[in-house]
Amino acid sequence: MPELTLETISNLAKKRGFVFQSSEIYGGLRSAYDYGPLGVELLRNVKDQWWRSMVRERDDVVGIDSAIIQARKVWQASGHEQVFTDPMVECRNCNARHRTDKLADPDKCPTCGKTGEFTEPRDFNLMLRTHMGPVEADENMVYLRPETAQGIFINFENVRRTNRLRLPFGIAQIGKAFRNEITPGQFVFRTREFEQMEMEFFCRPEESAEWFDFWKKARFDWYTDLGMTAENLRLRDHESDELSHYSSGTADVEYLFPWGWDELEGVANRTDFDLRQHAEHSGEDLTYFDQEADERFFPHVIEPAAGATRTTFAFLIDAYSEDTVNDETRTVLKLDHRLAPYKIAVLPLSKKAELIEPTQKIAAELRKRWMIEVDVTQSIGRRYRRQDEIGTPYCVTVDFDSLEDNAVTVRDRDTMEQERVGMDSLVGFMTEKLF
Ligand code: ATP
Image (cartoon, rainbow, N blue to C red; front, side, top):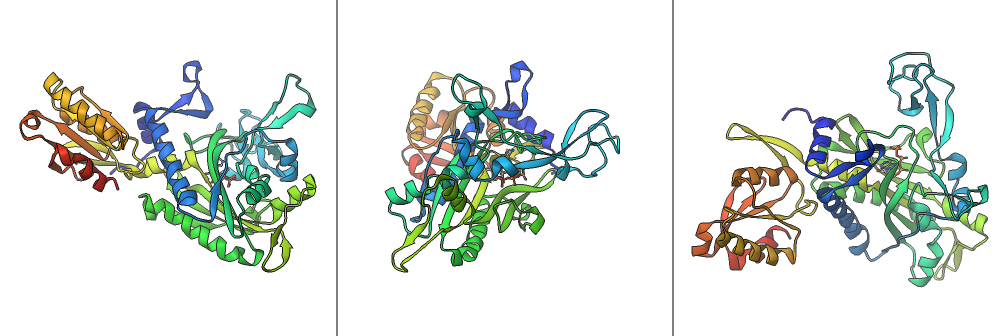
């Protein structure tokens, strides 16, 4: 297969209705994207799989959904107002702005190619602001959250108390985050509005190293379990000068994107930094009392923080493949069936009413369990190709024989093998495939 380019994958995403530019009819915003009918299913499936493995399948993690707008004091306490910055330079020749730490050559402008034209780097705060209420005054200024994590820390005591939680335990959240990135780009990889999937795992300080290792492995395995190619994934420990202001250790799960290795998720040891800061700034007691040990202390925190939109993009890239069938190139999204937007496409061989009726009946039955598409237009071969291209694992074809033998043909996306299955046993057959 030829090398996959960013263009190929973004074209497919746009053409098939996974992702559209935000405000496209007005020329588009480069910083934000809209998810179309297929993209919203894929994104939702990624988030569901994360929630399943991080919350539902664990007896020590609960979920919350906190507000996007929080008191400004939250971001003063967390340190974001002071230090959530990226170093920025401006090119005196073309006025383009760049993030210094992402420049291949620190003296050369990647936009106009001139060297030696950069201004001195300055720290640029990444938080987006707005005003609450009718008056646009400084005291009404609030930030849109740049991470979901702080919504968890400020609810630590609410959640612990109401759910009678004992260490170790985690609080998870999925939701939108906003960062005024200096250079958004690489399609949905870096945007100014995006979605995160974060979990704060609270534990005794002396157990934090062990939990750090546990979560690094668990998070790496989550991607491979959902079919991401292991060779395209790696865990990379941060150098000490790379660490965020709150972290005593961080490892990134990185993916080999078409432009090289880049971050999918950060697993950080946040120590007791956040709880201590919020306790100090709010005056609330955010310590934990361990009855058995008769001890009061600030728990330490291990945080796996992933991007939902970025991860969805990586799954899309990883699933892209091309093969040759009857001298024609076939594009296939080899998505794990748990992530595929449609699980089954039901395709009548012709538009004749005698086939449409059983098609609708079968689709109605399958729809009770899975996301289904019925497609009646174009030749059957073209319809298979379209389903391959959007990653549908199975096609069920209703033909004229079906009227006689009460059976349908089930086609597998990856092997293209076809099997005749009785209509009465179709749901059971598909349940086994789509466990
Ligand atoms: P980067 O170095 O790429 O800017 P970061 O290290 O600042 O990212 P974190 O603060 O660790 O990112 O955020 C956790 C996760 O949230 C990231 O691993 C990424 O998947 C996602 N994320 C962060 N910023 C963005 C963004 N601008 N667009 C899309 N996803 C993002």
